[in-house]
Length: 267
Image 1: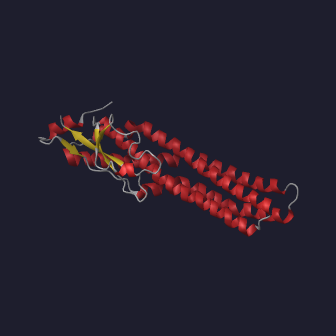
Image 2 (image 1 turned 135 degrees about the horizontal axis):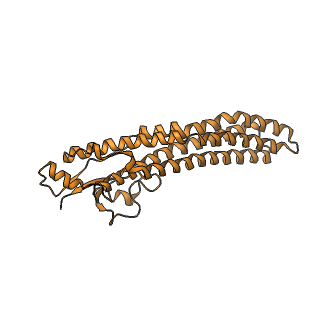
Image 3 (image 1 turned 120 degrees about the vertical axis):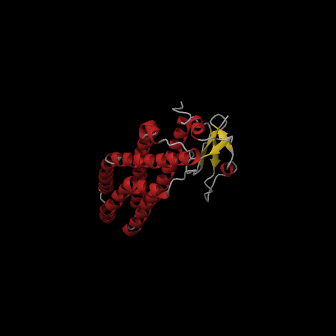
């Protein structure tokens, strides 16, 4: 439900003669995605990288001896590393919360500036993080699950490479190279996730800010990314309302960088 009607406030502030005003497009900076990666995802990837020498050494010892319990010894080393990383994951929620609040503060400032520039209405006293708490909590909990999944996937890839190596008697040097490549895949995935999560949070915040201002109309803004969705690019610049919008809203599908741009309509 709207908390206030921006169109009415704008009329009071200025003699509006146009039928609508399109607010400035708000594009999240890549540095905020980098901040998420460095604060939350990178420590987990680096924890696995730090564990690799122990795993590699145990594999080398195991492939040299190949005793009855040798495979269990390698598994135990991987399990130990996983336990250490899992404890780290549990400690990352405060960093996640700090990042989400920083993004909210950035987005709130940009939204306030866009409204002030277009309508002359200053929303400073009307906006706060408590208004969008649900979106912030959802982002925090979802990213906690995602970073745990990144760790689990790295573990699975390392385990598969190690046990395939034991089965095929693969030299230790080759297995070491493989598991480092697998860990690198986890790092690359984390970078992509951080970028996607920034888009999803800023999209959710933009929608909430728009609705609390009583704005129902918005323009679709394509990301113009290299690997764009053709149906999304075809919507670029078109007006929608919450009732007429497609189900796949801007920024909601995986790695979609599209945005919604608020339109203040004066009936």
